[in-house]
Image 1 (cartoon, rainbow, N blue to C red):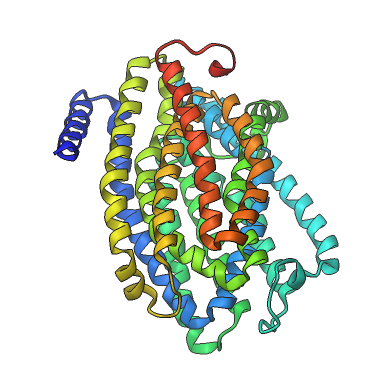
Image 2 (cartoon, rainbow, N blue to C red; image 1 turned 120 degrees about the vertical axis):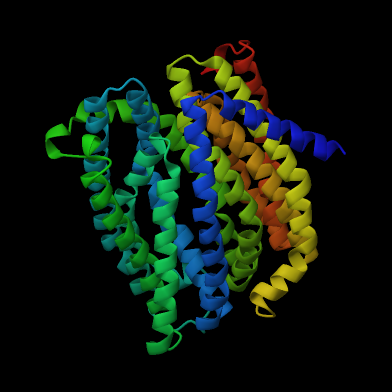
Length: 459
């Protein structure tokens, strides 16, 4: 009964917001609806990819790929916060219709990230030959392929993706994340088709798999960027004449705290695979990721709803529309409560059967792991909704301090709990971090909305 009342309340609130003909709200829900269709296709493709990939390479090789990709993806955090800085600055410029400034921010970001990417690539090529990746990543001797070559392929692709993914930030700042989701979906679909084709010509090769998984999304993003900048984004398309490094300073000033937050997120989310691989071996990495992939459907659904809000919050804050800020944050929280107490428990109860249908007997997922992953998802989405509000209005110092603490405590806690509770222990470590951070950021958000945020709470 309570759930029905909550659902009716949210439905009525959404109808009320849409009836107001608020351009910002209309754009948000238009993107939400389109994103549900596009990301629904992406979820389906992602689910199909797992059994197809496991059939092409065994779970151990798949775990090696997951570990390598999570390590190499760390380089995305070397943008020193410029991605999120660009998102906020660009959304602010567009809200005030300062298009020349918007063009300068975009152009300068491309050049700075290009220079960073080249520097990282040069450093990597110096250190790659002297690193024993097999020992560092605890790769078993049964994997006979050249890991240095595989990592070179992955790293090179990420260097390019590091630059071209700026189009996603630009689309997000324009409150059009559905277009970014479409680009991602086309890339996933391309990967799926490519793996099916590769299976016909190449026998179980981790190198071939890595080439497909890394190169195809980059090619799709390059073509999408070129098309959009020549058409709908032509007025703010990057150009060498618009590059001005004074804007880089502004982006770094805004993005410096975001950078530390990104590092904290890296420790919190991306080290799980490394910890599991070191303590339990690559096979357990596959167990963790298969479980996460199923429950991450909830995260994907919730992210579809909240993603347009980040830049919308920036827009509303720039225009001092505080009534809209309060009503929409309350709406998102109600949606989170409904998802947490309806969708997540049902998914947990059905998980055993869903895993059996999805991956068969190739990977075994225990009940404790499913239950802990369900709680993980509730904590993660609760953290997400408050972070998006605070990120949008630029109040991130409390997050910054919280992530500093997480950087220090999460890895040793994950290792300790992994040794005593296996894969479930790593999930429990993340849940503890989520719970503490969500509580504190929830309090901060409420203080800001009530006009009672002073000192660090308002910075």
